Image (cartoon, rainbow, N blue to C red; front, side, top):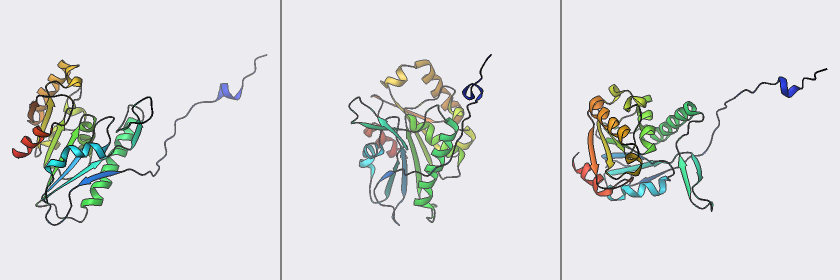
Length: 228
């Protein structure tokens, strides 16, 4: 006689539920009647916004306001459980995390700019590394103002169309910036070269290469801003 247990007959089901949680962002400068430029700067994998935003401290003046959202998923970076980093998403629950990230960034955008006249204000959105995909998906899915898009040291195997329709960027001044010794891009030369080529072909992006590694190079950032 064969006995069939409840466990043998049971099926595994995945369930998803929407929850509320607390996220944080950092700012530099003041958002007031004198503000002419607003930056949203989105960090890369394993970073925290409180440190990432310091890369932009030298561009702040009485007309510039900088916002650095922090990815809501944090983890320890070392075996001593001392250093903490954050990540925007993984392949697990990918579509849900993309939606949640867009919703989160929209909440920041709306809370800061909902009742503000943006006619004479330039909004620059910068994504670094993993943050490149995050900002592209955000801008591609939502109705937010973006005058300039700066994609720094990130790339997508299937080109920019993997994360945003090029048509969405036809009126947006777009930059792609990378270091010639970037350890992540150097590891995939054919993919990264193909990606830069599609960037120029699909959206006529301005390509900026600086001497350096996988970082936001402050002198290069300053030169780009001077070109605006």
